Image (cartoon, rainbow, N blue to C red; front, side, top):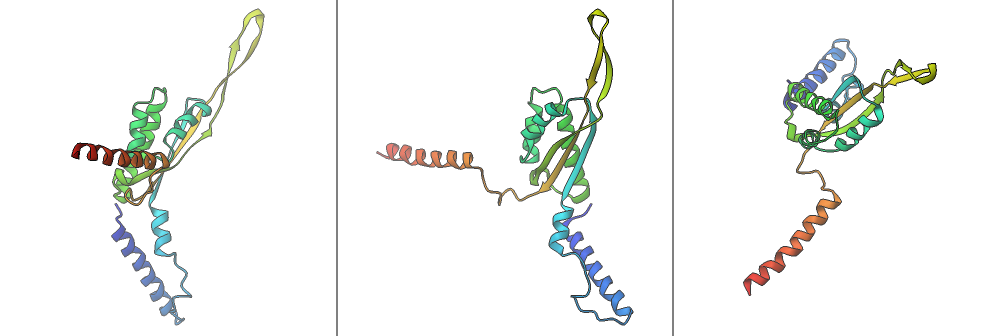
Length: 187
């Protein structure tokens, strides 16, 4: 389980080891010559979690509808959306999102309220071909589609996240409606 402090500590240790290794060779120890990733890049790259569920027995077109429904939502909201979705494969999508949340908690110690679905996409899997018996002695090929679901969660700060236009409109309407009611009550 890595926290931000342990990540910073490990990055600092790496930079110290690199400068000590260069100094041991008798070379210059200036910061420009040692090529290490910056701390900001390391934090951004380490704070995402990717989960894949392969060979789901559903058409990619149908599963894409569920992936579009949860894309960009906070992780907890995505779980609620999948819980009440009438689609047959919503349970599998919910399990995949829950798996990604658990991995983020185990690997980085990130709370589920600070996670957002950065990417949710579907790839075409193996298409099984089966025999389709038809009338008058004819036969055809029946396709049994499979799909791969990929969920990428990213850490974000809910307080600094801008609200959507519809939420801003609703808040503006509420604030306009509230002062009118308070004036009427005062009179």
